Amino acid sequence: MFNLPTGNIGGQELFVLEFGDIVNYFSPYTAALFVFALIFTVLAIVSRPERQVDIAFGGDAYGAKEVSIDLMRFQRFMAIACGLATLGAMVSGDVFNFTLFASLVGITNIGIVAAYRNRHVLNAAFQYGIVAMLATVPLFGGAAIILASTGTLSMWELFADGVAVPIIAKAFLVLGVMGEGMAPFYVAKAEITRAQGAPFILMVHVSSLLLFLRVIEIVISM
Amino acid sequence: MSTAYTVGLLVAVAGLIIGFMAIVRERDDLHRILLTDLAEVLALVLIALVATDLAEALILPGLVVGISELMAVSEVYIAKEGLQKPHIEPAFHIEVMDSAPGILALILVAYGIVLSGFTGGAVAAVGAVFYFMCRDHAEQFELIETVSGYAWVIWIAAFFIFMFLPQYWLFAVMMAGGAILLKVMAKMSLVGTMRGGSNV
View (cartoon, chains in turn cyan, orange):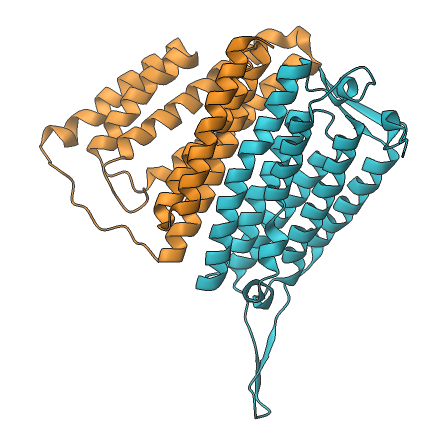
């Protein structure tokens, strides 16, 4: 059988940031994810929205779609907020903080997607919003079961060898993150990818990818 | 684990199964929002079952996240359906509503500042509620939001003083007390704007 060294799956901690009993940390693994999220947050801050070109079929006429300044500002704000939430989720050393950051990513993803005034896009955003809301149930439920069975939420203690976290709590945690990070599957709908705003939509993909990577690290280490 | 926890967990899981089945069967979008909110309450129940001080501290962020998601989805629903608020005339208007609110609100707000903290916030808020109920409140609404935002920043700054400069605790207590006054007042005065209007 496989024999993973579960104690330090993410490597030794490089840097520790202490807020009272909530201790954030960087391991080589989470630091890499953090840098990745940071790069994309900076990209969201500096980039300008894409202006799509519509070509009239059968002729040689074309027109560029205008992106209104309000829409651009709202989406940029949501994308930056999404980046910050992702950064928080990457370095969090506390299970409940991680779940809070995960649901914050879910909220900002709804914001990014819902900025368009297009009925189909809004329909997809609405369905995603319902899923993201329902996902908070297993997300917080998983954290609560971890707290009830081990008496702590600190990853420093949960990652130790002697602490047994019930499998149902791990499953709930993964299920919750799946729900919150579901946005790319809705984004994959043609209506949303056809809408303008390319650099900000990217943030939806980046955040959910990083959330998945991080929750897998947490679940394996526990 | 105690029997009470196990029984509570079973009840919560039963509630979850019922709630999720209802969401799957429901076709009306508005009803689905409401049902999801019910399911979120069960997430809070799962946390509350732990019944320790830490669990108590976790309820509030859980609730805030749930409400903000509910608000985001509701906004999407409103935009999706293209709903607009109908214009509503004020229910009644009498002469004393023009003259009294200024003076009474001033007295109550001033007394609230003397009291400070939660109590002061509540007293000052009564003044603000009365003022907004009697007068037109369309303009002041953004002002309340701004004040509330600054109060939050002051409150957080006070906590940073508690953490990093504990020797200045009295200053931090004063800052936090003043900010709580503003926060409570801003939140409660929204009650006064609940009779319809363009910004509400």
